[in-house]
Image (cartoon, rainbow, N blue to C red; front, side):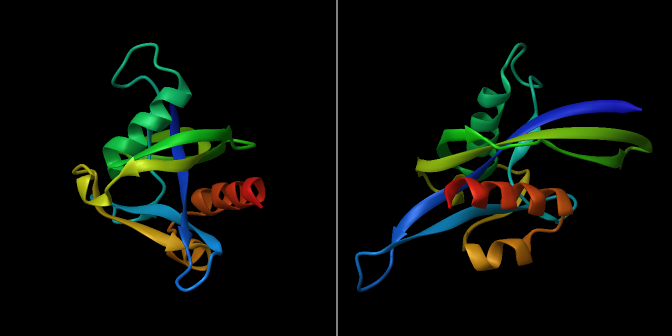
Length: 146
């Protein structure tokens, strides 16, 4: 069995509520082009740049897959882990997620790996996410900002 290590970002953006000075958070989610699941952006650590750190991978993958540049606020608690099969081979993946805040960018600038990229309010995120591992990571992110 192959072991994989990935890093990704759970990105929030502060937006002002209409007609008020209050701010609320919206969260970045994306739909994968191949399996069509709704996920947070992530990718293999060091698959593009040898010696790349998990932090560097997370920032790079968020930018590539969503068109958004985020700054890391903190590493989220425990990594999430799961099994999946790729080309008939079972793999065990560990994902390190980072809580990130939006800096700049446009979701229309995402790459081919994602078919859609959207900002959702908190109440919509868990309903949209496809996989349990992403839902667990999102709960960690919420605990970190709240």
